[in-house]
Length: 53
Image 1 (cartoon, rainbow, N blue to C red):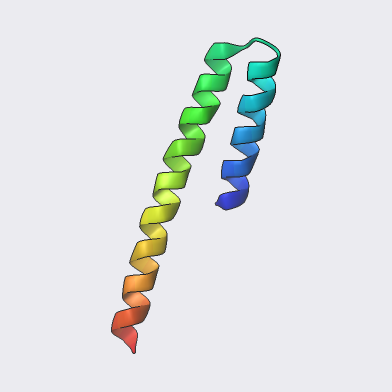
Image 2 (spheres, rainbow, N blue to C red; image 1 turned 60 degrees about the horizontal axis):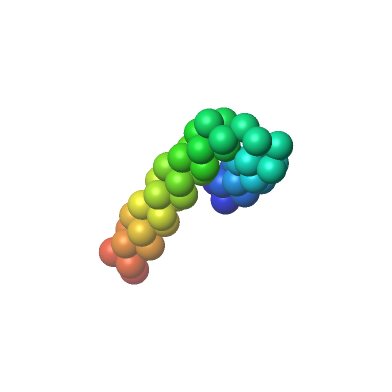
């Protein structure tokens, strides 16, 4: 998932450099959403590991 976040951020930066503001904003929003999903899944994983032991 982190790889996807980095890819979307790089695409957003390249699009912003070339002047495609709308596309850059879309890719940045997608990267943010994936980042929040990653954080939520990480917390769930850590909590489940804590209760298994």
